[in-house]
Length: 520
Image (cartoon, rainbow, N blue to C red; front, side, top):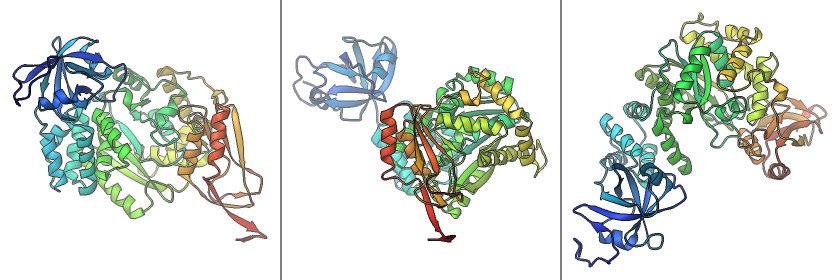
């Protein structure tokens, strides 16, 4: 009989006072989190229910996992182990492990507190993030946390506390040099590969810019996806330090290092829910900047039809939040509210965006990409007083014209393990292509960022580096019937066909038809 008065099956797990032992049944698959599977009937007999936490121990190693229950996957006396736990504890089929039921995490009470509309304190926020990192919170509990922040909103204090807690969840990249600058765009704009220009401009000007970037979630390419065409981006923290100390800059994938680790876990919860609470978004961005010891930061908030933010008032409010909270976190921030109604650059997709970057660095177009990059680099130079106020744009533009930025970019590529001598036309794009023609003569009234990204993704971007599309026109341009609006590239016929079929329901370019010099 166990403590509940129920007679135990002869093959049941053996309980101590609060411990039990069971035989491991290892599953050759990952679960995405630390999860173990217990026999449902047996677990309930011992007061273990779905999402309870258990400590799993083997040979002096231990980890906390979430309990799932099943009638079929495991028998009495067995515990199902996924790869995340089996690798950490060096388990194999038949290994006897010890389990201990854990107390309910205190973070749950603080999450409930936020659901009730009360402010979470500094230590309470640290406990929530610590429990997140220790796998003590289930996905349902983490979803409740994000939902509470979305419904109840966040105070400035909570954003600061969350930012600091996220930074403390990982390592800090401290190169012990000054000034350290950084930039961020809140996203939503196709192309817009400004980072790959701002970094070499600032590095050539003598500023330090250890830029950690993200991979795509919903876009046709993230900066890390695009830079990866030219050089490895998955560097260890000591390798990043070496690159930055030698060249003043780098462009690497933030997920390759243990920086602001909790943020990646929060993103995995936010994305499926399609929830992006403003306070969590602010903390996410600013924690990443603080984790590289940034002192001066420029934030780009694109505004317009098709951008993430369409209301200028909302953009101004967000800008004020960035500036005030950044100051509390020890960063001087300037925000640029830019036109987000049109893609930036011509290429959309990793390889095609790389070609745009080289075109700008070699003194060619696209002019909008060059202009925006010079604006951002100029602001950073002015913020840290490298140049006088009002002269940053001109200095940044001259660094491009003199080819100093190109030379610096090639140096960074080489130091990150790529071919620094690569030429623009050596960057391969998909060999299968399809031209999309203007169906009428007229003026382009709108280019839809979301549709452009969807078409590029349908063609295979960003996984297929050479996939995407290249635009020949932008908003405001006049086109004649039959001219090529854009060209789709894919690395297989099947993906090209899929991208072409998407055009039947997605109109990326909107035209105002012109007949006899009048607009219909």
